[in-house]
Amino acid sequence: MTNIALADRPLNFDVHALRRQFPVLARMVRGKPLAFLDNGASAQRPNAVIDAVDDYERHHHANIHRGVHTLSQEATALYETARDRLVEFINARSRHEIIFVRGTTEAINLVAQSYARPLLKPGDEILITHLEHHANIVPWQMVCEQTGANLVVAPIDSHGEVHEEAVVAGMSPRTRLFACAHVSNALGTVLPIRRLIAAAKARGITTLIDGAQAVPHMPVDMRELDCDFYAFSGHKMFGPTGVGVLYGREQLLERMPPWQGGGEMILAVTFAKTTYNSLPNKFEAGTPNISGGVGFGAAVDFLSRMDRDAAQRHEAALLEHATAALSRIPELRIVGTAGEKASLVSFTVAGVHPHDLGTILDEDGIAIRTGHHCAMPVMDFFKLPATARASFAFYNTFEEIDRLAAGVERARKLFA
Amino acid sequence: MPPASSARASYSLKYTMELNDLYRDVILDHNRRPRNFGGLDPADASVEGFNPMCGDRLTVRLKLDDGKISDIRFEGQGCAISTASASLMTEAVKGCTRDEALRLFERVHQLLTDDAAPPGEELGKLAALSGVKEYPARVKCASLCWHTLASALRSTGPQTLPAVSTE
Image (cartoon, rainbow over all chains, first blue to last red; front, top):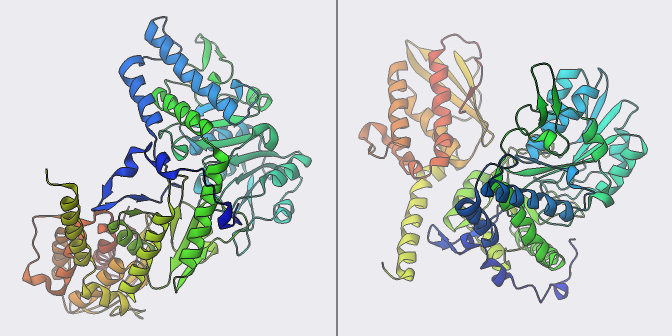
């Protein structure tokens, strides 16, 4: 993704037309045009998503799956249509494999508690990598504590890359599950997940991929990846917060017990016995985030309609431009220099703490993330308390990156 | 409504002033050359403060003689606001009694959080922190060292107390 020559920049990609579909991008922050470079934390919403949610709230809201009245049927249809769109979007085999959850974090917790916990015996192992987000560490630590299993961590190298050999070296006959990010949120590294999944599969190890940072940037295909579980969030892919997906292979989901009990997940309840509902409802106890699901469906529609190849080339060009522009700044160090990266740059500037940098850039209307990015082990690995992170989406521009570089230079001079 | 361009100009001016108000020369100076930075051994109290939101971490150590802070030093890592605040604090409380130092803490806390609290003369150089209240996300940066000091003062023995957290 990284080595795109300038000549290859998509000429047909009209970033300004695209930006007009995202109303917030037109606003001013502290008197300057907003440059939103914190998409890795949460991306902005296009009119298509805002309007879909608005239309749902104004005209169609009722509880789903319960009523025979018109609104309930409309709401059910809208919500379930979103599920159908997601089946297509990630090329799952059926709607039974798309479980709606609050987000990536809940998806991973669901697998930890419903899949791993009943399976794990003392001495069994769960394998993760050193660059995981806390959401792909803590649920496994919790289930290890509950079962006596051990958490094993495959190392990264000084570029922030995960090597297949290092992961394979971490696999043992006791490894029950391998969980890793598709794209690192703190470093941008794209992991070689096809090979990692294949290596795990060859050893009979179940796989979970945290796709939160990948799905907004690249097409993902469940049948091609062939993982067992894949988790992602709506709000990082231009949809609402509070809704996400756990994709699971149907045969595995069938065998798993429900995670939470309540309404929706049952077929029949007596005080003697409850018969669970079928997939996907078995895992969707209680009234879900219906409007969020509707907006999520609209976001998927939006992404499906756009030229994603062109968007991906634009993002790669943004990354190349940002890497070059930031590298010219003295005392600036880019943290995470993997060969294949998503459109994201994590960096530090000697003498300028990331939080001061974040405040100074905000003065210029530039939003970046500063801190440990919920990946403290990554920060410890690079012996840093925090970094600054600019993460791009297809609606960002070269000019915004130039403003970022100028702002960083200004901050460096202020603290020199 | 004024035309957009003039509104933009006046906002820009306002916020530039606020940023200069946050990073005043005193703050920049104390960040570059923190005073009373380093270890203190032996110390009568030693407490570590931690802000899990941003990873700032600092240790405050002090000596008491006749109920007064006879020496105080800090070390750790943090942003400019956090480092300068700790540096200014050590200068301000040296020679204070425990109660005087705790009263100053209350006063600084007010300065950081209360719009209606203009810096008074008793604050001296600490008044340089008054720009922080315009940046709510940064208040904890400035107050971490003070919470840590308060905890150190409330302890008396030489033992190391559990770390203080801003959360």
